[in-house]
Length: 233
Image (tube, rainbow, N blue to C red):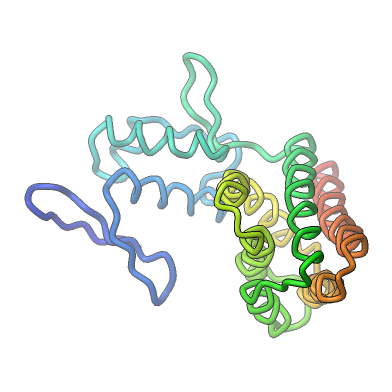
């Protein structure tokens, strides 16, 4: 949801990012966010063309603003553009899934080793996992947001702004993959919560090796389920 208003001749959008939060941003950022949500929720499917003319008409904005919004999504991997071609929504395939999950595993494993060395369990990770654990049994697309918050909290727990920034360059692609997993009802919320809980227990116990192994199993199982589902499709 968004509301358009002006301030001193400049156009802004108030974009509702959740039911209870309203964030005021500039027109390019607002357009980028709304396109992002359509992609992540499947309204814009993989391979769909996203042209400057269409974005300009769809959101009633100037072509330069449309181009800037598209470029933001190209930069974070949700849109792809080849020479002399319009941008298109990135298509999920096995190669992309393997690369996203394995890159995540490298970064998250490094973070877990540091956290386990100090037995430091990020409170945000605990809160995100509690949210998943409270969900009804069964696979549910609603797990995607708290699941990603859990993993992001592990990275942020290290306290490195550069590591956190690096991880966030993967975040949208990771969310796109995770949404595909849960849209296909491939992973039970209770299983996710239990796996997360075991990882946090290993961190509390200073057991970096066990934490790393559990993370590898957790991410690897989701990766393989999605690849298998894509091959069936």
